[in-house]
Image (tube, rainbow, N blue to C red):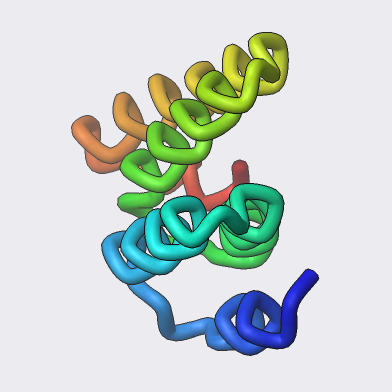
Length: 95
C-alpha cells in the first residue's frame, strides 16, 4: 500500500463521493490494487448510511479486475445497502 492510500484511509471524514473519486484517480494512475484497498478499508471502517454507491464502485472495479465472486459479494452488499437507504433503515451501517 502506498503512503497516499494510507493517508486517505486514515481520514475518517471522507464522503462516499470523495472515496470514489480518490479510488478512480488511483485506478487511472495504474494503482488498481491501492484503489481496491482504499474501498475495502473505507467500507470496513465507515458507518455512512449512504455507502451503497461505494459498494457499487468497489464491485465494478473487482469485476474489471476479473474477481467475479468478490464482485458478486460487493454487489449483494450494494443491493442491501441501497434497499436500507431507500427504506430509511440504518442496518446498512452494520455491514
